[in-house]
Length: 120
Image (cartoon, rainbow, N blue to C red; front, side, top):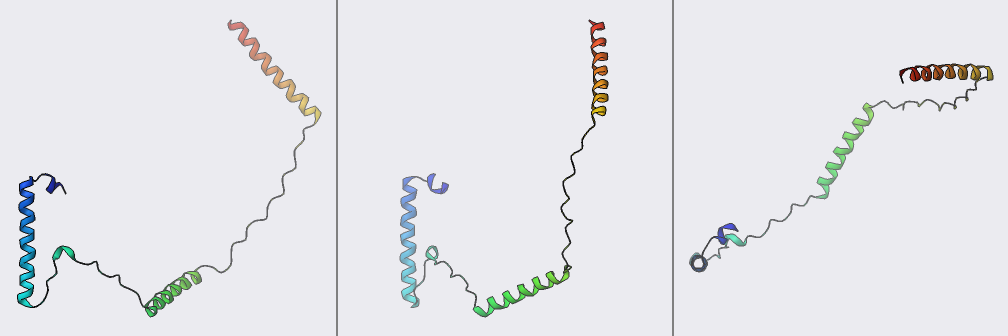
């Protein structure tokens, strides 16, 4: 398309007249030879190839055979999934253990607070 945008109007007219001359010469050649010639620019699109029912059946059978071979190569037994575990019992802590942990935490915080006051 960029080819036509750079042409002047005179060049476009010249190209159009040449195209008309070519078409008229093709028609004259067709009359002389006795067979109409088709212009190159006006070719019809090719028709899609259609597959016969027999060919489709062959392809289907081959695909089924391939899949059967793949499926037989795998072990027939499915792996057994482990049974779902019962939820673990909630652990409880005794009152004595709670008191011991509380005392340790209080001592730790007292030590940290004491160290912080000295630096100020």
